Length: 64
Image 1: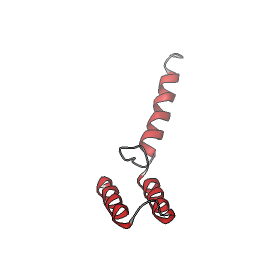
Image 2: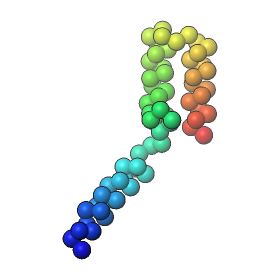
Image 3: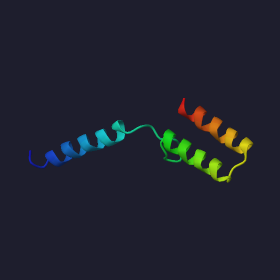
Image 4: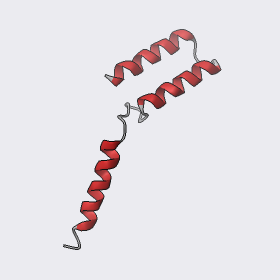
């Protein structure tokens, strides 16, 4: 019985971390985090407006 407790506790921790966190996109970022990065890159001038809009649209489609 003592041998079983680490697996039970580990399963509970795993469940809470996987199911309790917001969904991530294919690159491992949370949707809001990816949007913030995109916004910052656009603000810095790293992206032109058409690229920004295209990438923003892709993020919105992945959220669905």
